[in-house]
Length: 352
Ligand SMILES: NC(=O)c1ccc[n+]([C@@H]2O[C@H](COP(=O)([O-])OP(=O)(O)OC[C@H]3O[C@@H](n4cnc5c(N)ncnc54)[C@H](O)[C@@H]3O)[C@@H](O)[C@H]2O)c1
Figure 1: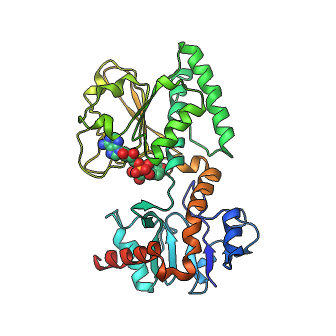
Figure 2 (figure 1 turned 90 degrees about the vertical axis):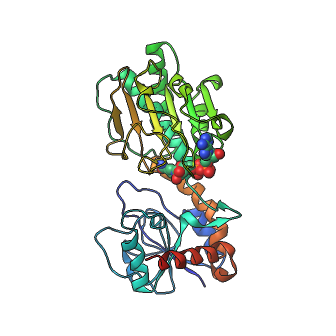
Figure 3 (figure 1 turned 180 degrees about the vertical axis):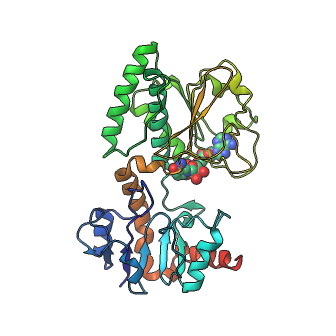
């Protein structure tokens, strides 16, 4: 019997869960036993205390989403299914990975569970959806509360609540300036890009005011002055190699409509970053980087945990996509997805 142990998330503002009640139920009906340590996340499973995964039986799979609690360097003896963010030379990657080696544990990283070259589960759709939502909110804020600091972002209980909130603000802001915003989505055919475009449509932005670009439109090479003609630019591309920048700092000094950039891709620290007009990242607590220009300022949103704006729907979509792969855990060695994930772990360990 496979024993899955759901770890409570400890990262600030992380309200998502790797498993949802319906997915947990299916797993249990298929002979898996489940333990959860977070009363709020799941029902119908055995409940353990928050943080008790450390003393779980050694054969239990510890499943969670984000980083393990900081300031803990103890060896990890279990198999963890999570986003560990340590395979792409991220800061501190050796410290994270060495914990598994010292504990003789195993990391099966959620970001690298792949089948036929595609990730089996990803949060992209709701990242784009939320990236578009925050961008429209910031645009309305610039009009309705000029000069006022944009407040901390809180999550929404569900999608209709977010849509309702945004529609209301858009209505007020558009009435004040006599027009609705124009939104440009880059990487529109991907998971994030689809979500970004869908959100704009769901809140009633005119079709002609949603500009959706992907590889075909950018093949001539940037920079693209067309971006300046939209009020909001939502960047959702998957950056895989060096490309000419989409925007430059000098361009932002020109007369333009653009006042909000939502960088869902968040590649500002990547040397190949296609939007080299700002540096760093923002958070729900401090959502914006302000860029002064010779014309209007531009506010940048660069939040790397955007799906947390809608934890319920984002968790639901992710867990459902992950379900089939979790059902293969009892025969892990025969599953391409899990075998490849284990192989990748061993390759990364060799680099230590
Ligand atoms: N901020 C967040 O919270 C968050 C959450 C999830 C994913 N992401 C990031 O968003 C990015 C996109 O993820 P995804 O799952 O949507 O990827 P994806 O592969 O599904 O889609 C990427 C899209 O970008 C397009 N693209 C790539 N290069 C392009 C170019 N030069 N010009 C135009 N289009 C281009 C591709 O054709 C594709 O349609 C990734 O970097 C991912 O890490 C961010």
